[in-house]
Image (cartoon, rainbow, N blue to C red; front, side):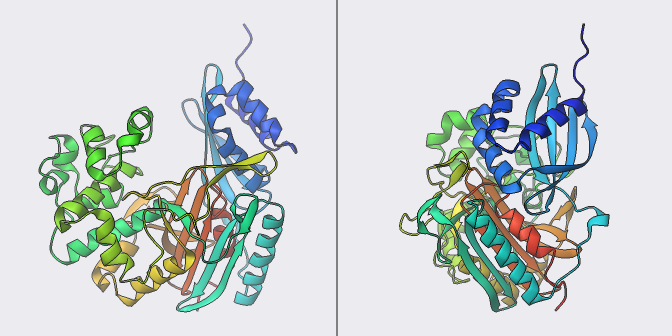
Length: 440
């Protein structure tokens, strides 16, 4: 009997197909070798086009039937990793994610003018090649130093995007839910140690109700997991409010005991939305509109798209044809809409103490839990780009990518919104975050 191809052999075959000059080669490889992933091929083709292909830096077998490739992309020089899962038939899954820059790849910092000029040139090149569509805002403290739009709100067709275009921000919306919860903590309406069961008295009597606290939910350490999957697909049409999600998913048991490790959780932030509603006595979106968006002068931010000025999510690649998607509907776990000016106003409102006092702002922006190459606070990711630490949040879904980062040491805020999937916003965010001065 012939020996089965090794994990490294499959990685080499996958990478050769991914890097092929004609990106349709990759689609053919997936359909032949990973047919279960064929429905998601448009998302992979978007990654292929945005990256321009990968240079393999190293690989390691990171588990039974798993190999991780550490790579650098051709178009942006961005470091990331690709995880291949394998079974007896070959590759069963492919996952793309960020990775920490190797120490030997530290980039020289540029002056502000030189860094912004380089980013503008890079974005112009990518937009001209139909590889980027979106809006970028960079501010230093309260002074906006770059505010530009590229591409179209409708994929490859007019009208052109503008700095006022609204975009779906995906999971970036979680940071608004976190602020709302911390406001209630600040007011003494609830405590970080309160359990789900204490705050939601009608929640099913499960381990989540008894042991998962508000702090666990904010730090993604409650084991509450995700809701996407077959059960979500069966009930998607009836899932509109936190109560709807609890009705369908409220009896799930945690993926791990509360507080024992980190695991990103969309369901956890749905539960925070339910808590926000129960404690405040109003709907989660009405609470955020009054207590976050109004106070931060975010008049264009909310859970719903407005067809007049909202970019349409697009999947696929320009080379093979982009496909529009329906607008998402916002939830406490994300999926709402905003524009770069509103998000910059949010950053300034946080810094000015308009949303949280100093103690609770520190809870929001200070690392609390380790999550691999990044840390998490009570609501935000806390990480570094080329040695410059930042706090913020990203968002990603088919046809959606967003990045919000505040660099306390230098005073820069970098916001990138795109109507293309990951890593279309992460690429320029990483690019400029690694090059701007890291001190005032």
